[in-house]
Image 1 (tube, rainbow, N blue to C red):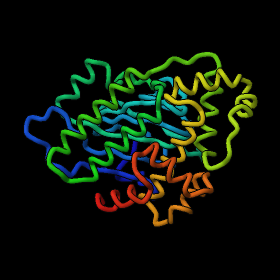
Image 2 (image 1 turned 120 degrees about the horizontal axis):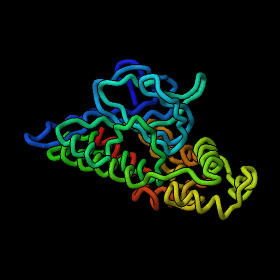
Image 3 (image 1 turned 180 degrees about the vertical axis):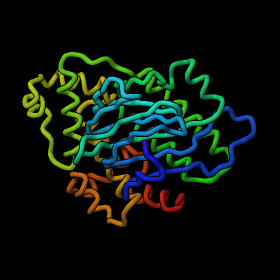
Length: 282
């Protein structure tokens, strides 16, 4: 979760709510963001509630000097006013994090339901690629100042916490190895990846890898790799002026036509159309 005053990475995307909150709306999103390479370690009290999802990299999490909990890809955690939260990647390393901060009386319902994990415990969740898609939907709404967007953002945020809550998973045999494979894919998505060789390298069967990857991410290996490449392409289309051919190569697909077909299949529009939409919303 970003410290908005001190932890602004040059490539971090932060979206603050711009639409007025309708009177009587029980909950709204204050800010949401994406830190591709979070290197800063927090040790502080927070003035806001917030939920973070780590999708690559590793580190740890600690509350009020209590037990140290390990964070790996697929871990979610919450911060809120009161305790001292101490968390982040180890020195010299980074992790990738998505986050948002909700506010309003509706938070009490989230807490009573257990959706907001105010138990000072990190939770491993499944289907992180789907959660990333929901975060991008939230960002798209917060980019625009339009009537009803505060309510739309609140609805997406509520879906995020519900999906995280019901997507929690317990560690099982081989789970550490599978998360190592996920971390490898997130770091090397632009390279050719042989999943059978990767499974052998981590001493698990390919069928076990495929099953566990489907359980955690919601998709089989080849589809998961395609989504990683499309997510990276979306960031490059939004943040740079690189031509589509160069973006295709940077995400591991040499043929721009194959890249465009893949992008349209997973995102719903062509790369050029996506860039035009992002330009208009900005």
